[in-house]
Length: 578
Image (cartoon, rainbow, N blue to C red; front, side):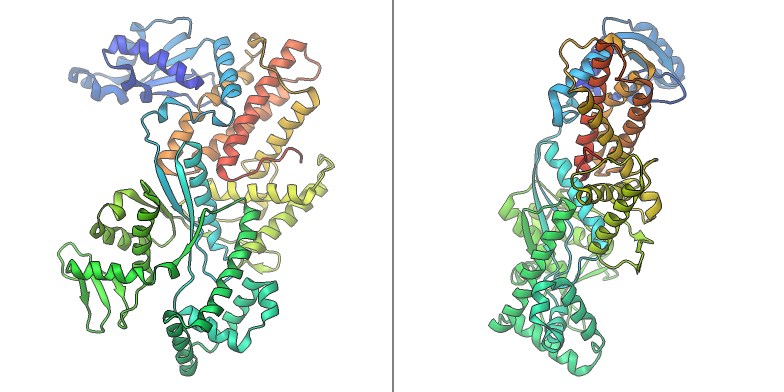
């Protein structure tokens, strides 16, 4: 990694002066963010970050003074051309030609693995991770509320794989429960087998809406309860109807996931664990943790004082399990099946997650809370199509493709495309993903079509446009060749800014890997696109001397390569024409 070799050089010199092991200093040396307003150094050491490792008498000294004193003790060499002190930092500027040569060579050599080979990840153990995400309810159309879980889970799985972890992607379907009793009764009254085969999710949704109108009717309640009871007793005819609902729904989900560029290794569901949930209840009972309420329901006391002020209901009065019980059974079963090191749930059920985490303490290492992580997320607000309030995901995908196609058709710079509909789909999806990932995942956000689909500014459309533009540049002038590149031709400020930004990629990946927030990568890619756009204007390839043109072409190739890598992690397929 380019940044790695520079960090090691700086750490080596610092270790001699500070009498500290170089490996203790590596993570305290960070690449400096590019600034539009002023020239910045390439790396900086924060004095505060090494205070705990320094002698106690320096704690009382002014940080800036300490930075100045340390800077004076350090010497420039063939790698570092300038050392200066800032407010509490020591700043290091890398020899400009060495910077260009090292960064370009590293991006070229590592390709799709640029950034992930960094020594920042050297102490991170490679693990087996199970990521559970999306989890729609069978027999209900793919609701827009599932979009965030699907996009976030896909990003986390992509990131884990890129960093060398083994990942199992699980879609834990809502395929069991009393609602299937209601749906079964509804289908017997309003169902149509032909419609079920041609458009299963739409038809089952229509049936569910119809039967819900009489859901409070005592006769309907009784029929629904009887249907679900038969389902739990494995009545052959009832199970056959349920299985048809499930199989046809999964087929349609897979089609929609394909549009999103998402896949799963395993389709699981609550139905898999109805019996194993009884084993969970037995364990809780044997441990003396299962208590009966006056209504006959089974609860576990989660309160600190054991006064039943906080409980989790794990069993109905008739002895059947609940969602949370089946979730616990699933966690234990997955450990037995996959031997995972960590399990990540991408869910919005905050209260459920809290109870689930507390309950897991009782089930040993298989469900240990420190090995299970919940990634919660906020709501999308204000997402409407031209027809009104959005309900279903496919409506959104069709809408964004339609709007994007219209925008591309009305733009003069749009090239004649081989498949404009497919391009519009990929660009539209990028717009959705970037708008979703720009902020903290736990925050709600207000969706705006006009803002999301802008071709300028901090949008997914701009990322796609930049990638297509840089790809077009390479096609027009021939592919860049790194051999014998004259790096002395890349000393202009705008070229240096791109190179400096490329240096920071491994730190951004590391930060996202720690908190599982995609916003760090989104911010990085948007800045890279803006820097590349400026460089594209000020550093022309056409009309330049051959060695200058070749050097600039290599710079733009490196920018496009890293841009594409980051986009793919986010779940975006880069387009080559727009």
